[in-house]
Length: 336
Image (tube, rainbow, N blue to C red; front, top):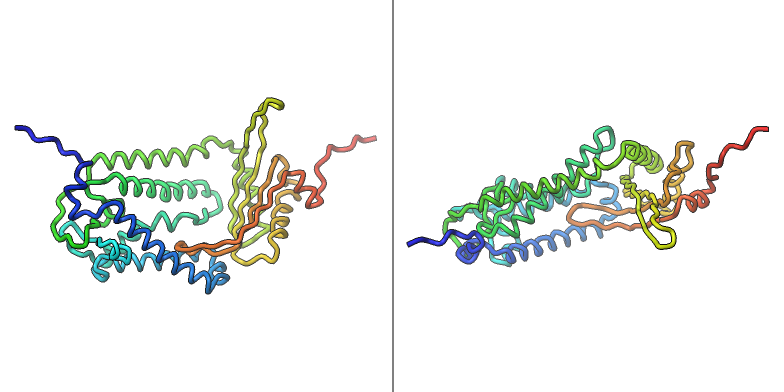
């Protein structure tokens, strides 16, 4: 008599009395995120300008609130239940159904919140700016993709990266039996493959760009930063190709400048003109671009909540030069 080989995809029904189901965990996460978002929105309503003045460091406020919330309530102090978990009747424990300590729960929460905390953080300008951007992208997107994959596909134990790191399980609240099951090992290989795919996606644009292209982008960002000191500047440059029956294939180069201000500007349009003037007026100013988009925003970002007022100004190079009353370069007059 032979037994059927174990199928990890059939284990969810067998462990239903113990392991919390996918939808219960998602429901709890929605409740918790809504609660934290409401707290952040209240803080933003009361102290909008003060939070905006903090810049990206304001994210540490929301991060600290989220860490205290998840770290404390998912530990034995909160009986392993945030508000969302309490409503959905699930809790965080170890394999033996014991509630976990506060440091262990805080470590688990840190792993969970890390990609969210890093998302949107500015890349330090300088010689290693590109390297920092790659590292942050891998941490943000690689960890996020691996987390989502394990959430959806690890049906045997329903452990994601933060659960595996903390040695915890999310189980139904009434369950007290020990969990002996382990994650299906091929999940680790699949997760590693997904992270490599993310790495390839991050590196591909950098390897395809020409050195002169990157140097122009760095110089353009330096010029913009000089016009709005203290603001956070991001910049993208590329080419859009189009094909029509009348003109054939044409390409248009473009630059997208994003400026996040932490002090409320008196006039968004004046700020955009200052940025454009810095980019176009110097003898070394930019002249080889078809369209320039300048997006100026002001607001706060405390991770659990953010709000911004945004104005976008999109013109061709010729329109910008005319708007700023900058003469377009002309060929030198012949000597007589």
